[in-house]
Length: 400
Image (cartoon, rainbow, N blue to C red; front, side, top):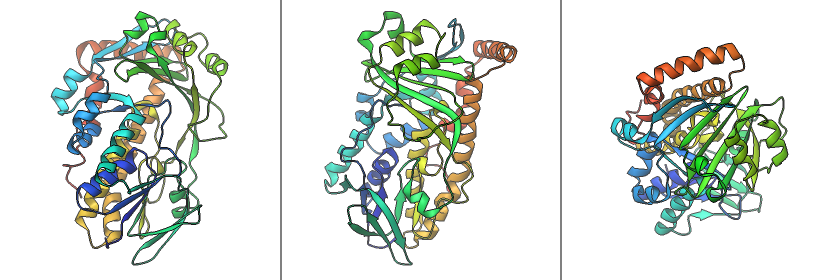
């Protein structure tokens, strides 16, 4: 690195985690966000032990715990009759096995915590209302240009700008993400509007034909967050901020269990977005540019690892920069070498979960559901199959 700041495009979770880590360890960084206000409406997220290993090590454990919910169990149910296929403990077993808990919270809550931490160190680091346009790079620096005619010189540029990453499009002009054939619905419901039965449920996955519906409480049981996904032939817009129509949502989940219908009926604002994938990028770096998180490896929400892998990216990038303070390109190469294999594996696991939750063949569903029921009675298979994901500690894992 040189004495110029590291330029971060996007004030989402990965961008803010990276910024906070850098400035806490003596590096100069600056964040540019296109929106006037940093907000993430109607979005709950899962933070598994690999994500909490990062948050705890950044010194914000208590703030996170004060805002997050700790699910006690996870249940897998059939979409119509609500038969419980598997019910397994979460936090008791998880904390014992992986040292960190499994948490659920509003995305905007974690963003507000990170933003506050950064502002407490230096309130001039985060710049909103800066829509990124392009960048140019040479052997010494990167020059970043914005649509408001402003420019900024930095040591490297980090694209934390999501599925529609402009940084990625400039770096890899032929890298458009492709529609996965799955769309998702998302919303928040005020718990007070729901029946006692629905309020009492912990994390629940309803598995149906070519679709599934997940919900869990957030904000200390004040709201219930849900995501419903299903197969669709096409999608025109890959923004997740598009508002959706309740009747269309009801039609997509017609005939489902009364609990699912109750949740839909009591949702005030509904969001709808297409799920895109991009597993075959040749690289994530150029001389002085790198993409991380959804910009590099978008994935299905079925494993709840999008935010967690983005946080891992941020820490491994910081550690790679630490290894090669005087050589930006070697730092970026080291980052890519240490992240590509893992994120591709998690992308595949997320896609597998979607297929498992969307079984269409009724005979196959009976066979697999019965097998899951029997195995679930014998062992915590949900935790066992996720051990390789959850035990990863980005601050401690050995770098190649």
